[in-house]
Image (cartoon, rainbow over the protein chains, first blue to last red):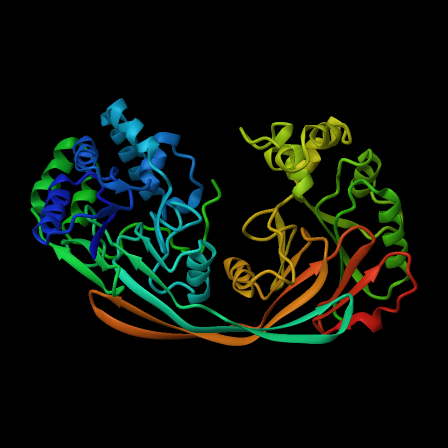
Length: 271
Length: 237
């Protein structure tokens, strides 16, 4: 059976509606959302209410968490001083706009969802703020999936959709301890695991303005990355009219792949 | 010999043990640095005398460089040095009585010094941490999955991680292996191969059991303070 995974809607209602329409057209009933319903974009209440109305299973993203808990992430969240200033401005604006009811909904979201061997998180099983980039250290990537006890890990946060299969892994070790003067060598065979990043509905950073999401077939484990065009200009105009930083509209209109993200993807935010 | 480090942990207020280690080190050739990887305090005894000695070494003592460990983390949390967090891990594992006992073992005048201690040191290509890069309470042993050990090394981008939390003495070396991965995105597919880097995790022991590390030759020696053991018999390359 096919199911759809969406992530990082970022208060972009036209993009969210376009993606949900695309999923509906394919007759897919099961949708999982990996969080970041708000932040950057101009329609936070509308997007949260759309997800609530559709009763879509959702886990909490880093923006959703920050709106509830306050901005207490460590310095890894922003790559520059200007980016931090813009982020704080957007945080304050979103905080002012969101209704108490919608904030309560964001607060109620779990940090992960699990269906059998499938695990759904926003950033990584460790943190909503950790980036699992497509080219990160393969052993570290495998560790995230394996330690979480999953076969397939679905994540978002990077705004770059990808499917990464980790296979044919092994680690040889040699142990020496205080009780044994002789070496003990052994080899651990690592399991095959997969990481699927759903990209971003509301703020793509893969070099195109199209919204992205993924479809997974739980019988064959095939994953399809989907791109959906939407009225980017409408959202950009709403960003400017809302008084949000204009650079948010600019990068949305470019799908800018070098948009803001923590430079050290291996860093784990120590909140 | 370029440098020889002594690595100690788990003193838990035991000045007598620390004194034995210092005496050992005075008799051992070439020790240039002493690192105390946390658990300076514990609930069993008053710890102030040990803390005073660590802060104000005796003449002839090898000057210790200290970091905080799990027991300091619990004490500092309960004393309000960690924001809203309390000594929940200790309370959960050992109960309220042990939390109270711990609070009574350290004079409040020592708390600021304990709170000033770092999480760990990076020296050359080595990380010296009580638990691991993941958490001060991360209990790494020789039985821990090599995948997890490699992750802890990778997070810090170091070749050696000296850890103390388990209280065990071991030297686990990652000697080989690899992994293949395929990434598919909107630009197509690409294959990647990665080899296991030659890296090690070293458990340094606790209390009387401590470790010497020869930086130039990459040899570890597992020792027990006060024993007659010849370091050469337990040296591992």
